[in-house]
Length: 94
Image 1 (spheres, rainbow, N blue to C red):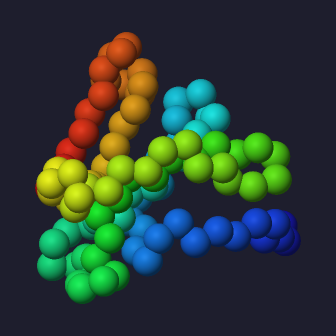
Image 2 (cartoon, rainbow, N blue to C red):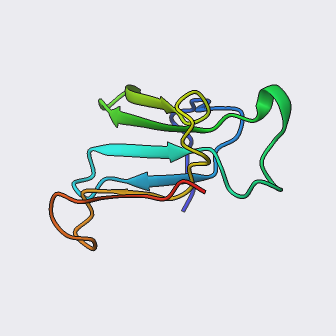
């Protein structure tokens, strides 16, 4: 196999987790791993960003700034996962 990169996009200054929606239509990115490992100063972004693939590029769907909203640190997010039940959202913010 000879993989070929076809697209590149900077999501943030630091990206920790990427999750695909259960239906395969969206990607969710979070920026925090652990407080001691996260970047500092202006590079210390704390976000949850969602994108959809339109066949050519990632299109933004929403962006939550966890610092501005005083939510702590985003880590792993599961949205609409069949593993946690219908119509439930798990949000781990630390």
